[in-house]
Image 1 (tube, rainbow, N blue to C red):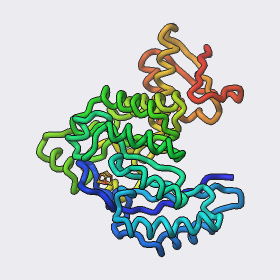
Image 2: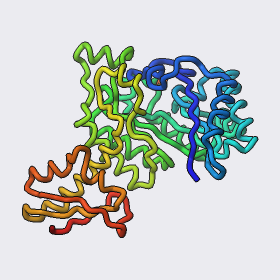
Image 3: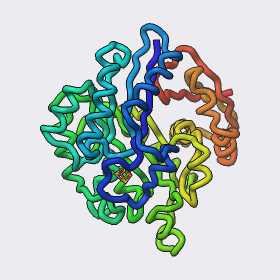
Image 4: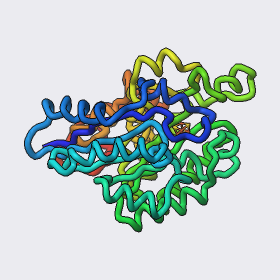
Length: 333
Ligand code: SF4
């Protein structure tokens, strides 16, 4: 049994403005606005790859779903609901929207139409950063909308960004703490990627903004990943999906197709440094769960090389008795 996601992109639909970093036509790889027929076609295509017992969920992503013109939103929702009612979308519908486009009436409508999970693009909990990045909503909007979404019984998802114009690592960590306090079931973390055709690209070209590089983003994102996970929040995405369009259109920023793995590797590296710092230089075994061996080694053996520079020659060994995420034991070789 597995979880199948059917993504229907609604690029920029419903957005009252353009956020500084956003060029959804690039991010979603779709420029046309979907119709009910597209929802049906996506479900029909997905049926071929689904096995009995799988959980199947359809997600409307890429715009401000609840701010879409009402007739269009209902067209899409009604189409999806037919597949919920038929039993195919047994995981219901997931939508993503803006924090200032949530109210009682909208949530009642979503609930009546098979929506189970609502994700908010919070991006930052610092009003100054939100303003500088033309988000058009406040941190308080995130708090109010999140509470209402949870009160209606939806699964709450919260999305945040790092490296936005005017933001610091500390305010990103504070954003994560404030999001965790809203008890989301899931979170997404997106380091800023500067895409052509955005306000950030203009600022970058004028020399007024420099996004964090990949090497700068990984330590912060690994810290955020750990923070969310330790507080019981599933991080369902870290970094933009690998797509040729993004790679073609990015001007600068922290993009890597396997960003999550890089961050997981960084968590193991930091743990190893912490445990080894009391020990003399020498040869050690880093013992982790078998599934985590490559993360502990790091991409291109990055972790082992960094440890060797500090005098610790390490080998990584998988051990079936270790199951907890990021569990690491040190043994002498
Ligand atoms: S609200 Fe979301 S989809 Fe719309 S412009 Fe901003 S980031 Fe892009």
